[in-house]
Image 1 (tube, one colour):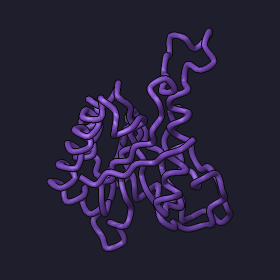
Image 2 (image 1 turned 60 degrees about the horizontal axis):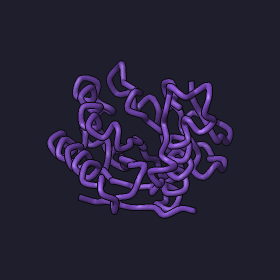
Image 3 (image 1 turned 90 degrees about the horizontal axis):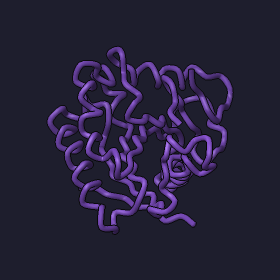
Image 4 (image 1 turned 45 degrees about the horizontal axis):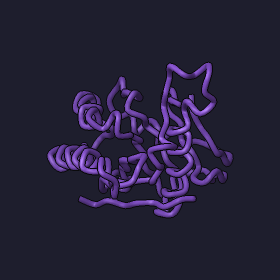
Length: 192
């Protein structure tokens, strides 16, 4: 299992491509990745979140694919007591990746990445939305640290694809990549 870790001091609709580390990306792809964030409370659903990819494959087969990486971004550390749950979830997705030939050669590799948010910071309490300003602190910190970690990995652009972002047609990744390549100006966030 390839696992990376990063040490550091919202659900998006259809497609949101962020230029890494909040800079502007020139037109074109650069080094592109999909980042799928998950935490301890939803690690058990990580494998199942890829089921629809068999019905709606990410890309058509072709030589232009296989350059993108799929990052499975765990909110906490691979060193803590609960790391076995996160590592097991990542291994399950890697198994599917290998069985599907990278979902039709859409991705070169699956990478497990931990962004090391402390359990005290990794908060997501929807029921406290009106009373606790930190109710969504975990996902917010995870997004920030993911952007910095991907920058350190040499990634220029990424699509933050949360588990509730579900494809509804074949070759959705082709569509995202075409949208990026069609941009004639720099952008930091692109989405619909």
